[in-house]
Length: 393
Image (cartoon, rainbow, N blue to C red; front, side, top):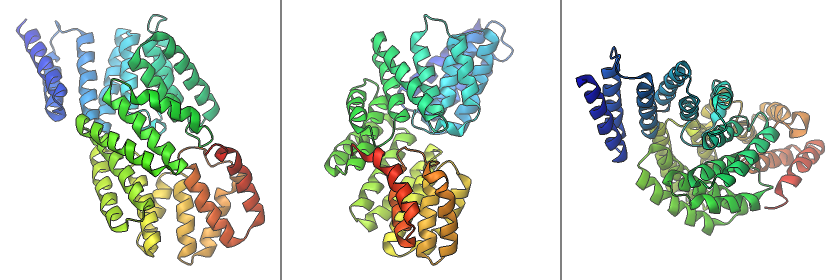
């Protein structure tokens, strides 16, 4: 009985610390509670699973995504032993990450877990089913974009019938991620307006973040500034590394576009620091791309070439890195290397390039490169690929 009380007190203290945004302290207290359950047969496995889920949540909020994923896997294993579809779904969603745009495709264990969770949920668990469906849509958005779009539409349709604001916001975020092409800006703009109104500040932040992407694509800088201000306010409220990193990345992008190079350089380094704290999968890629843009403008491409080569090799699923690398090679006199890399990117008439948030920048870099090399067949192929996706910009 005394052990049960100690577990209860530790968990309540952990919950309170999390509510006060003291994530590291909350993690310590959850670990303390978990330690007290070791060998304590009176503490149920469900209670232990709930503690693991709480620990994974605060680890993710603190930016320790690797630890959060490991903890959520432990929770998923325990949920499977218990036979609880609810706990399994919550654990799998936790394993996918807090933010739906956080590149879930980098985790090859996620999709099988999502499939297990979907099978374990009953018809009465519709809100969790929507979230699992939405996360599944995001996990396959790059490899199977058409199926991803269908799944996200299904999740959104179900969510609208539930009249649950948090579940609806989750489904909207998934739809925005799954349809992140520049040819459907109107639908996405309307959805961001809904998401910004979400009662959860994390979800409202995502709405502002998605809308800045749309505004950049439209060239609407005043709108970018408006949403950047909203993002910054919410990031301070949330006090989490992931949101602070995205504010820093967006601020650096805006400075680059406006030619504020000295300020941009400081912001890029600030974004790198924030990205390291957030342990974001994309932090290095954003850093290298922004350094490339800045150093190209300043005639300093030689400073970033080696790092850009390493980043492009490390993440073959982000072809915009190879587009930037090909331009850097060309401008630094490595024409043969640049031509070879361009021919790889141009395979199948550029159809291997994903239509996502990177598409317009990738196409702009490639257009410059093709114009420099004067290859009419590549120019025609890129034009045919580009035209349908920019019809509404």
